[in-house]
Image (tube, rainbow, N blue to C red; front, side):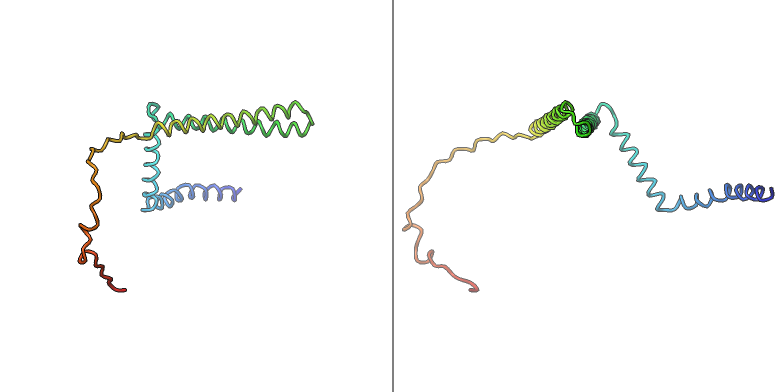
Amino acid sequence: MPIVVFILIAGLWAAFLLPSFFDHKRHAPKATTRDFARTREKLAAVANSQPDTDTYIRRHAQVRRQRILIGMGIASAATLVFATWTGSLAWLYLNIAINVSIAGYVTLLLTIKQRRAVQRTIVTPITSAPHRALTAVPEQSTYATDSAATVRVIAG
């Protein structure tokens, strides 16, 4: 009985002394910097979670597509394992159908991504350059004199 009382008293002392010890370390400069960074990340997450923004819609669509793809992959693996385990040809056909649907889904996602990339490209119209009259190259005799034809080689 005295050991139980001693453990209870030690526990009460620990309950009062340890929080103040850890609280002192929590307000150290590194901890406050970490708290500031964590708070800033939370605020950025809240700002990006507005349901009216395009980023919110795109992010949730991407999460939904990932979940669908993961579900199809799990279904494909499960049907393959079950077809192998039971030796059933019907389960193998189901696995092949799921694999074909995965390929079609990935193709659909890639075409959507490509269309978005094309829509986001900025097209600038090429303005027509002003028409200049073409001139012929002058005769060599007009610009090639002995002084003009002299070439000086420097350092070599």
